[in-house]
Length: 162
Image 1: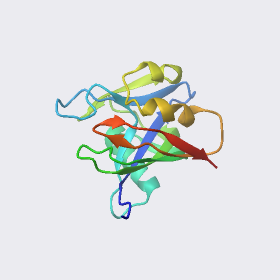
Image 2: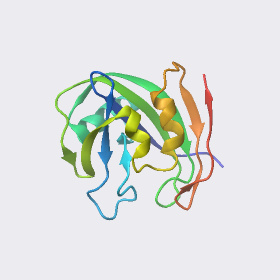
Image 3: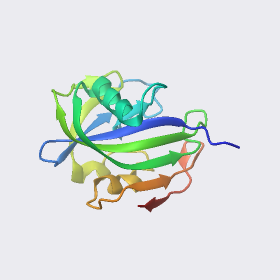
Image 4: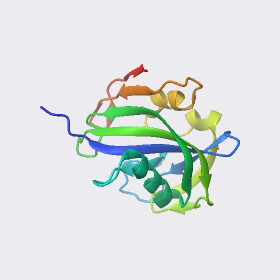
C-alpha cells in the first residue's frame, strides 16, 4: 500500500542570541487535540508550495514574522498521528534569523519565548521528547526519523543521521 501522508512543516524560531525558542502554548480551543501542550510553529503544506515556502508561510501566519534564515534539521514520519489515524510527514526547521515582531497570541494559543534548556520541562507530546534534542544539538547532520502512533500515543521511535 502506498504511503500517502499529510506533508507538513514544524519550525522552531530562535531568539537573536539563540538562548530562547518561540513556542505556541496550545490553550485557545477546547476541542484542540494539542490542548495544553507546547509546540513549534507550522502546519500543512499547500498544493502549490515547496516545504521551505510552506514553512515561511506558516511562520508568517502563526507568528507574524518573516523567516530570514533557516535550516532543515530533519524529517519525521508520523504514521497514525492524525486525529483520525492519518499519517503525517514533517519537515523540521530551525529559524535562526527573522524580521518583525512576533504576535503575542494567535487563534491556537499564546506564543511564548522559552529558554532552550527548559523545553523538556514543558507539557509536550511524548514523542517530542525524543526528537527535540536532535533539533537543538550541535551535530550538523540532519536526522530522519519514524515515530508511529496508535490511538493517540507514540508506539516507537527510530532515526538515522546523514
